[in-house]
Amino acid sequence: MGLVEEVGSVLDDQALMEALNSTPVVEGHCQDRWGDDGALDGWAREHGGLGGDGEERRWLRAARDALQEVHTDPSARTRLRGVLADVRRVPRLGATGVVWDLEAPPERRLAVELVLAWADTEERMPGRLRPCENPECRLFLLDRSRANTGRWCSMKVCGNRLKARRHQARARETPRPE
Image 1 (cartoon, rainbow, N blue to C red):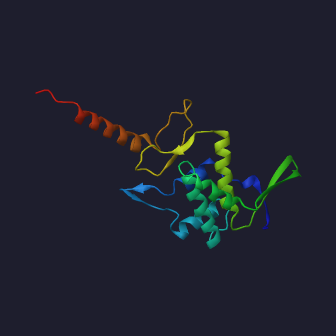
Image 2: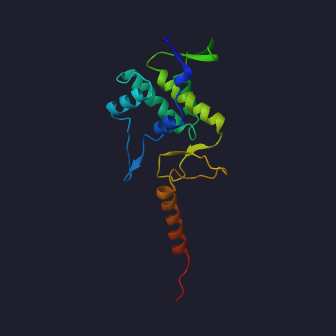
Image 3: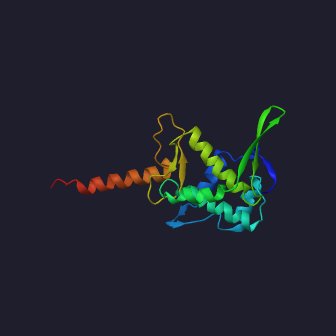
């Protein structure tokens, strides 16, 4: 087992969304912002990781990929179990109450925190974290609207694009007066 780490450094919603949205489609081609080791190392360092460790990169990419697929592929949950294997949260009394320590191998800690951030978001905001409804998009949205009706990662991009396509399809189906 690795060093004991404070859970106080758990990733937040913004870091989770950065990870989930690190594979955007640009001009019809999927990009992987974490495909470049330097970019991923920078993200890891920014969020309290080791940055520069090949095993940490491997675990982060595996966790991200499984989290991206968890809504559509039941086997993704099994892969998440692999990230969480032999990890423990241990309570202890701190100066202001109970503090939870995360016991995980150092190279896997940030990937575990990514999964914990996802689980926390799902618990606090059930059904609000979801993939964009544009089938050509790989981004996710965290719907903070009161009605929970968000469908697209961006209304300006995906929403308008899909609405325009539907309008054009309806216009083609409607017979023109002669």
